[in-house]
Length: 103
Image 1 (cartoon, rainbow, N blue to C red):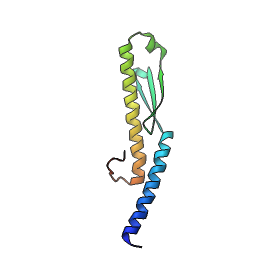
Image 2 (image 1 turned 30 degrees about the vertical axis):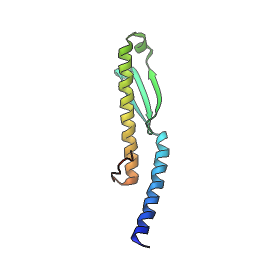
Image 3 (image 1 turned 180 degrees about the vertical axis):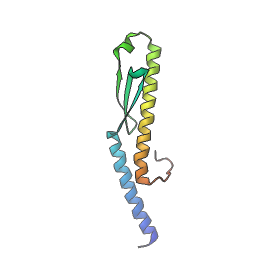
Image 4 (image 1 turned 45 degrees about the horizontal axis):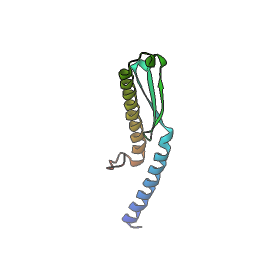
């Protein structure tokens, strides 16, 4: 088989593996917290939010601006961690190759 043929087979195999990893990312989660645990956010490996939990005492304070900041901080932390997990999983397939636009 020609080297181009081998390369095409290898690329097709890698594409299949990447699709499998992407499908499995929904099952991986990362947590972000803020306010000493007053806000907890769980993000999936596909960068979607799975849950947001807010301690009732944080909501009872009446400081809406502070609560919004805590939620924003926890969401961004969870999403950053989920992207790190997704990139680590994808790099297992790509063997560390930097493929622009992949993630």
